[in-house]
Amino acid sequence: MKTISYAPEAWKYLNGLFCVYKPPQKHTPHVRNSIIHNLCRDLNEMEKRPPSNRVLLNGSVCSGKPFSVELVPNYADHELVSGPHYQIQDIRMRWINGIGCNSSGILLMAVNKGCASVNTLETSNFLRKYEIKSKFGCASDTFMADGKIKERSTYSHIKQGALDSLLSSIQSCNQALSFK
Image (cartoon, rainbow, N blue to C red; front, side):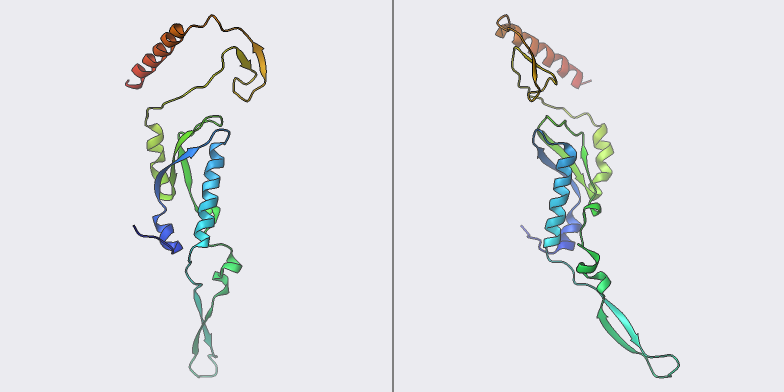
């Protein structure tokens, strides 16, 4: 395995698709922005190319003497003048079929040249798996776990057999639809 320490070489390989875990209570754009921020920080900490030189011609046409050519540092290309070499707006990154704020899971993301395949992947109908956690007898104002509880009810009439039957019915209906 080759370790890359030169920033332009790392930038050249920074293309394609990758998976990342999105935790709950984080918006998808927040995950994207934190990845871009970390990439820029890491690229700017790597070894960079030296500032280019500029050609300075000394002399005058009127004097008739040949010009003297001198290479001097180009301060316009210096990092302290132009800012960091790799900036947030330089990296293109898109997610494919994002998930909601309260959901957690794997996000498929594209970076730089990988963004060209995003539209094709978004129209693909990939299978998804959902796991739901709930609490019987409580209803919140937002129907989420962090919402304020508005209603309480008894749930002793709900039996394991009826719940299993309902869940298997939902699963078989969705499984049949996924292959159409």
